[in-house]
Amino acid sequence: MPSISSSHSAPFYALLAFILLAPIPYGSNREWAEAILLLYSSALAIITLFNLYKGKLKLPKLLQKSLPLQCLFGLFIVWQILQINIINSADINHALSGLLLSFCYWIVFNLVLILCQQSQQLSALLWTIVISGLFQAFYGSMMVLTGIEWLLVDSKQIGQGVATGTFVNRNHLAGYLELTLACGLGLLIAQLKNISFANNRERLQHYLETLLSSKIILRLILCILVIALVMTRSRMGNAAFFTSMFFCGALHLYLMKRFNRSAIFLFVSLLFIDTLIVSQWFGLEELAQRMNITLGEIEIIDENNKPGQSSSTAATENINSQHSYKLITGDSRDEAWAQARSIITTAPLMGYGYGSFYTLFPKFRDGSTRGFFDHAHNDYLEIIIEFGFIGAGLLFLIVLIAVINAIQTQRQRRSDIYIAAAFASMMSITSIAIHSWTDFNLYIPANAMLVTIIIAISVIARWQKS
Image (cartoon, rainbow, N blue to C red; front, side, top):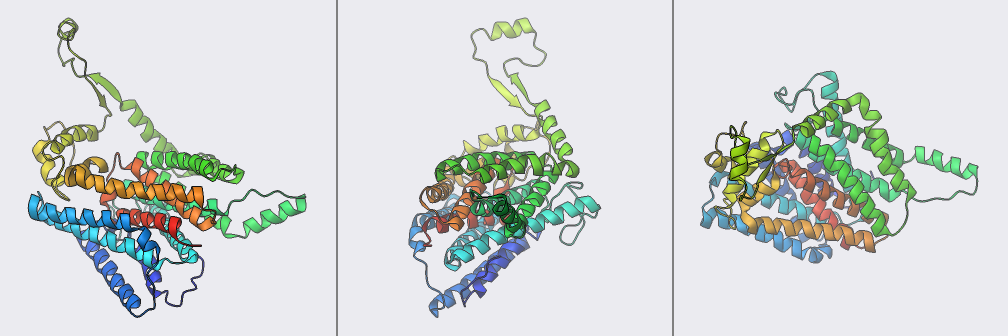
């Protein structure tokens, strides 16, 4: 990890420690863990304000560039307050908890902007995210390989035989690994150069230097992270990572307007070496079986043909009627989504407040849905239900600005570390956006906080002076 030159770097190191610690207590998905997040971030904010007051720190100019995001964050917090006080949230306790979490994320967003004022600090921040992912990957993989499956202080009750790290749900570890892999890929891409050699001696010297550099260490870390991602057996987690990697990789090459053979080799090696070869020993076959089961259960049915109805009767009734088709995935989530969508129609603009899905969904389910649903397993659907289209629109604009920042950085800047940060932001957001269609990673505080940090990184990548 690069050294930090600032003489007042204690708050920055405390921020790095915060990133490392956040996912350890069950992804911070417990009330007491959420309280620790809020207390830690608030204490660090107070220390930072004190250093600003004493002149030990200076407010960076890029805070002005973050004004649109600051306004959107502020409006979203105000919206949650209105839901609690005026709209009467369906679950007031969860709504208050969501408000405090949003305030915590906003604090962390500003701490990153204020404390990360040097390119070395940005590099250290990205490395810390990668190291956090490495710990989760190693811990989760070793639990599976040794058969000793413990979380923080108790034995693992669900998800045995698959990697979950310190998270309870394998899909949430997969979401966390997607974000850390994107940061690692960004760091590695920034170090890749197209180099021509005058002779074989120069080529050999370059390869030896590479073996002794941080490149090979980072490449091995990425391999471990990919193996752990495969060991989660998360179908959408793996699909989201590889889809976002190839899409964002192609877009990166287009934005940079140069043919980088080393970057192309990196993307291909992640697929063929890490996944298809190395991961064969770590459960790739089991993941493929889960994928095949999912694909095998997909069915499209005509809702006009009712069970027990004769074909002639059905044909007569459907002559003048429009056919309506339904996609059946073999997973109860599709039925839950269909029933949950009816909640939106009752309060489309205003929503019902954070955490209200758990309270509302039992009133709308018709008994055909199997299993227990405390979340919708679809971040988009749950966010619209709880925050309405107004609140969801504010969050969408925050993400959109972050993506624009990442794209513009890769188009306009040529500093390696800022390009690395921009690629990491773009790929992280793309991957978690894909994964959010079938899971609720954004409702896991450790994952949501890391997404917030990555949004702040997109601002730094675009606007911080070299």
